[in-house]
Image (cartoon, one colour):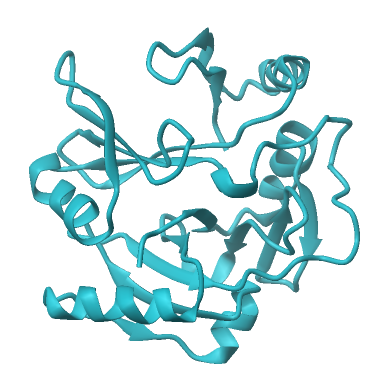
Length: 245
């Protein structure tokens, strides 16, 4: 029943045009038009990795975690239900919208909507980036990592470690508490930061080339989107910057 990777993410926002510009011209995703209320992005051979949904409302979000097959999905659902977690077997209409074969949904103790799925759809056309880049490091590592802010880490961490099988990579206690967890060779697919409130701190996607990151930084500077400047992390050794959506 082990989770394998972060497969997709979704965010509620009414600013679809802004998201399209941000996703394509800065990040380099490929935008997929899906109607007046929905926008999705590709970043590799999969049909969909990121979803922006106007109907969800600003601040809403979901995170899709991949398992190997249907048997693994059933085993995960049974494990969660045995622990008293409410699990919903989502209809085929939602699976089709997520571009997967089947999925379940549930919530973590902080209220985040989590989805577990198997059978992600592969597109029969090559990935076409929104700007000239070498591509994103995904595959078995998943689309990247997500960092969540929580009121108290100790109330959330057992859910991810004991029930979902995340393994601790490292942590810091000062100047704030932050714990980093892995489920594959990526240093972390999930991190929790104790801030006193629940939210999303950032989504990380990894490019193959440092030049591509530098060009994105130049674009972000010109658009006044830089939140944290260029630098290298001491735990996963990523060279990155933080951009405002």
